[in-house]
Length: 87
Image (cartoon, rainbow, N blue to C red; front, side, top):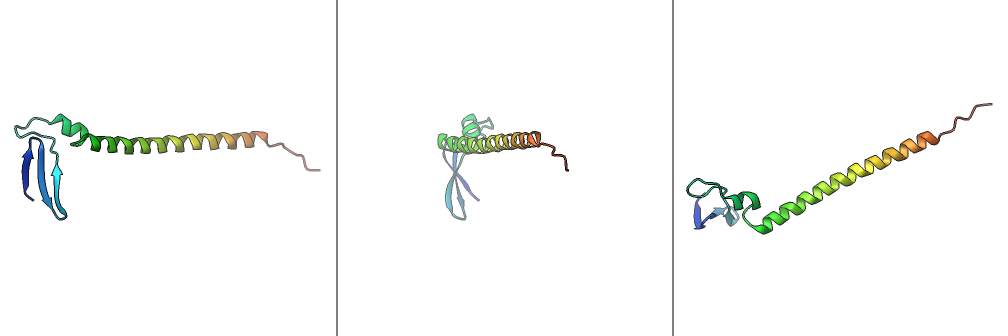
């Protein structure tokens, strides 16, 4: 695969499905490109990643909340059972 530099911090790579942009985390001099490292190369990529992370964390929180609520219901049902003596 051949990478062509088209701008500082952006490369163009030819793959099986055509060309795509590559945002390397290191500059030409070896220093770290913080914008590419933190955002994935663009603000849109960062927003998509954060949205996905929020959806995953929200799903985990909802599942945890539902399990706690189900445990409380089971404990309440168990506490309400009345021992009926057999005659």
